[in-house]
Amino acid sequence: MKRDFLLVMSMKKMIFAFLLLLVPAFSHADGFQLYADPAMQDGVALLAPQPVNGVGVKIDTLRFDDNNKHPVWRLCSWDFATKLSGENPIQTDYGITYADDSFLFARDEKGNFTMRVDASKVYKKHRTSSSQPWINFLVETDFGSLPVGKANTVTFSYSLRIVRCLNRMGTSYDTSIHAAQCLGYLYVRNTNSASSDYGKALWLGMGCFDNRGSGGLLANASTHWDLGTSTYIHQLAGKDVFGKINFNDHKWHKAKVDVKAAINDAIKSLHENGFLTDSTVDDFSIQGMNFGWELPGTFDVTSQFRDFSLVADVDIRDRKDLGN
Image (cartoon, rainbow, N blue to C red; front, side, top):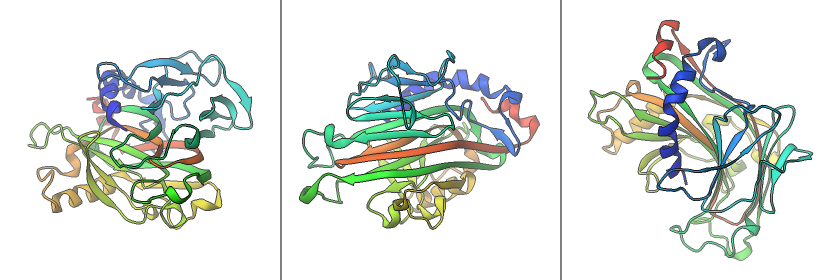
């Protein structure tokens, strides 16, 4: 699932630490923009479906123009191989498109991205156990390391549209082990060396689409331990991210999250269960994110997204520390 993201992220951190110091390049009207390339103008590195020695391996680069810069985004399809190729893009209604029989990734000239997965062409049979692997089709990127305590506010936003979600399981559908989820996570870690929780991490889930919820929204916030990454996950309720919307209308919907408040809520939930008891919101740094489809069920799905933004209100005197 998200397990190999952590390993790749550690290799990239020093590069992004330098990038974050280039304040003029990433200044934002309302604060400091953490995304080095929010529109993926430098392309996307395609990773192999299996890591080598625990590290994700780049096998190709997907380009959307003549830019030959090093991409800061990665596209992953963990455990399930894709035949996407950077050498063979085609033009479709979705824009410049990389596709095979089962997977599609595209960007149009307006900056709208499309992710499609036809799980009915990937699974040889429906999953019958929660211990079996499932399709993960994700984009991910790193940030240097923003100490949350140095920011007055941190705001995450983007827009999402669910184009289709078709259940191909018939009578085999079991909501306890099958779902179609378009999810997004920020990766945050306790970077306060004086804390006994130093080094412990949290995935902050941005409460995106779940076919099982009313209107496709996750109904409630939840906190649990993720075996795959040995990391806590705190998932926000969908209404706290998107408001009262219905993804089944196939329209664009905007997400907006007060990240400091969300991390604080996550820590409170963990404290109530006796976890990370020596952590406060100011101990954490935001270090990366991922977004896309997780399909433990046999669904054929298409989503579109745009306008990723992660803006911190940070005093100019503190920005020199953002990569540390």
